[in-house]
Every structure is written in C-alpha cells, then in structure tokens.
Image 1 (tube, rainbow, N blue to C red):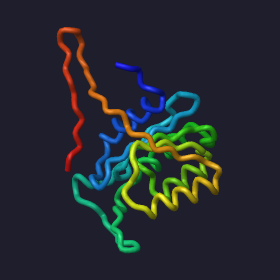
Image 2 (image 1 turned 45 degrees about the horizontal axis):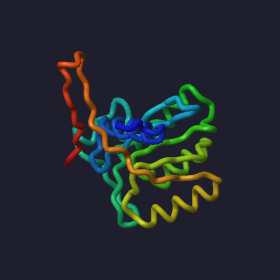
Image 3 (image 1 turned 90 degrees about the horizontal axis):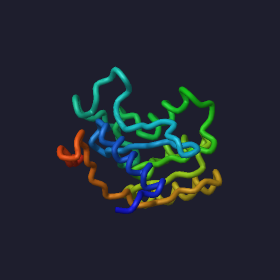
Image 4 (image 1 turned 180 degrees about the horizontal axis):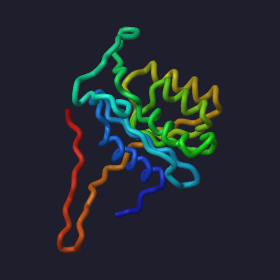
Length: 171
C-alpha cells in the first residue's frame, strides 16, 4: 500500500470528521491546516445546547426555490469558530473539505485569509461552481477538487486481534 499524500491524508480526516455530522442533508467535514498541522476541525450540526436535526428534524426555509436547514452550522463555520479561539487570522491556512463549500462558507473562509481550499467532491449544482470560481478569483485564491481516498481503517490492540471498522453514512 502506498503512503497517502498530505492532501489525501487531510481529506481523509475531513471525511472522518464528517461522521460526527448530525444534519443528514449533507454530512460534511472540514479540516483547517497551517504548516502541516491541524488547527481546527468542524462538522455540520446544531449549535451547542440546541437540539440536533437527527433528534428533532430539520428547520427548513425556502430561498430561491431551494430549501436550507437553518438549525445547522456548516462544517466550515464550525472549523472557523474553533480556529478563532486560538488564532487571530487564518492567513496561510489550507481548508480541506469533503464537499464543495456553499457560497457563504467559501466567502467566510476567504475573508478570514484562507487562500487554498481542497475539496473531496463537487457539490451538485452548476450555480455553485460558477460562484465558487468568481469568489476564488476575486480573492486570488485557489480551489482544487481531488477525490477523497478510499480507505479501510483497521484498529486493534494486538496484531492477532485486528478489527476492521467501516464508517457508513447511508440515509
């Protein structure tokens, strides 16, 4: 087995972080990295102390013919909030996200100083891709799409007691 590149490594971690998500409209994870060190992680879910979507359902609003869950804080927002507890700015930080960020999250990342974003998959609409291209160009940033690595995790305390663990997030 070949060694993962650093980008694959951090994208794989973003997928693991997404397993904590509590809004099943999209399980998303974000890892913020500076100088090859993880600064913060975030996943989509309700704010602390508020009921989660998977407990009480979604709080949907319609905007431009599309429904959005307002109960959920996005993975990128959560990661930014966590990073801001320790850092004044995010200059030099790379964001690893398992899906293309929405326009609001992308804008927030860019305004905080993130100039390189690596996504494990492309979210489903053309409008998002067009806006993503405009925003990254305006901020002099780059967004890259790389498939998330297909990984099986193996855990065990002894060589003879190795257990395989799969993480499935099927609706």
